[in-house]
Amino acid sequence: MRGEFSGYHSEWNLGSPGGWDYQRMAQEIGRYSWQILKDKADINIELDFEHPILNPVPAFANLLIEAHRSNFGREKPSIALVAEQETLDKVGENIHFVQYLNSLPDISAYLISPDKLELRNDQIFADNNKITLLFLDFNNNVIVRLKKRYNLKPLIKAIKMGMVINPRGMEPIGAKGVFEAITSEYKNIVNETTLRRTPWTRQFFHRSTLGPDGESIPDLIQWARDNWENIILKPVHGYSGKGIIIGHKESNRDKCIQDALNSGNYIIQRLIPLTLWSEEFPYIDKKDKSLFLKSWQTDFRCFITNKGLIGFVTRFGGIPTNVGSGGGVQSTAILRSNITAKEAIKRINEAIMSLGFDFIAQLQEQIDKKSTKMGNVYLLGPIMSTLRPRIITPGHVLSLQAYAKNLWDDALKLESLWREGKLTQYVCISKEEEEIARLNPWNGQAALIASDGLFNFVDDYD
Image (cartoon, rainbow, N blue to C red; front, side):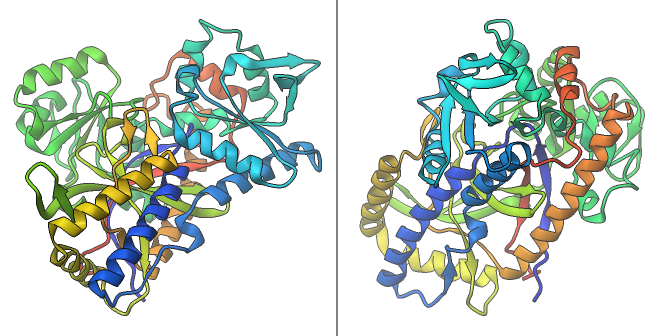
């Protein structure tokens, strides 16, 4: 069974990756709409929405519970999901995950802001409840900022005690500049699957370097001007798509380049061809009362732990696809029929289109109501979904599992290099962030890695 796929990871998140519960909700919505569509259009294709790898929540919860047991043995787990105060009632994922943890036998979970933590006799408490494990929904730079407003000594103590998942020592390896190390100085120490999936990346300032095809670049800034339509600029520590500059979408290249240089800590990457990571999905325009195939850019976030690949988040939208920038989350289904993913997508799209605007509009309204009732919302409001799932094959799952295992191993190698001072030029963080990171090195402890992939599963590899 073949299952190769093409594409690249666009970034890694080793600090506080999210999306696990949004995928769970997307699966429920996708399963609901698929059954209606399959019955109405008599689609003779079998899709699997139930495979455990399509719902990361249970495996993520198990990761936290096992991390607790490594420190506290049989003591009852008391887990705090720590988020910024202003997000506590707005990020449905965190709310739902705490509810899920509390539904498990003999587990207590709390959603709190970091200022609510207390330190008593070298133990961490929140509202008089002893805490045995914390997962942070923010990165080290936010800790630095919050320290100016709150007493975070309890949080810092928890980091030192190894009670925080992810260990703060992981985060520097998530800096986007590390991709330059992988595609230059340290390309011979990482696995082939990691190297092949890493796009050419350089830190963005006046410098000479080697280009994507090994060519000599005397001045990277001038090279960016000359190749503007095919490059993307990103802040090294950006999130939710903020600060990203896509060359072909910006007419004033000189201003964009200067803005990036003035901001500092930007990287440049060769733009991954849009056709590689886009798919067509049926879409309705309620205003024009039309049903048509719309091309969306897609994103495939892999969740990885020491147990390997535990799930995905399948996003779509513009560039970037981040939910924080208005993107959506769609369901994923494993193809069980003996046809290629490309053929399955073609048949399903045609079947949905044949049902016409009125029927699909009614279905979309049902989906939207179900989504809102589930609390499938983010800071910007309700999260979009698509009428059909993103489709992968069992072979793709096997390939993704091999990719994930290798990435975990390579991230560990890179963390060791950073602790030895060998990645300093690629990881541009403040002294305060570095101090936090060095409080608790990773060394392969329980953790959750996210790798955002711009992957194509519908080419001729199926």
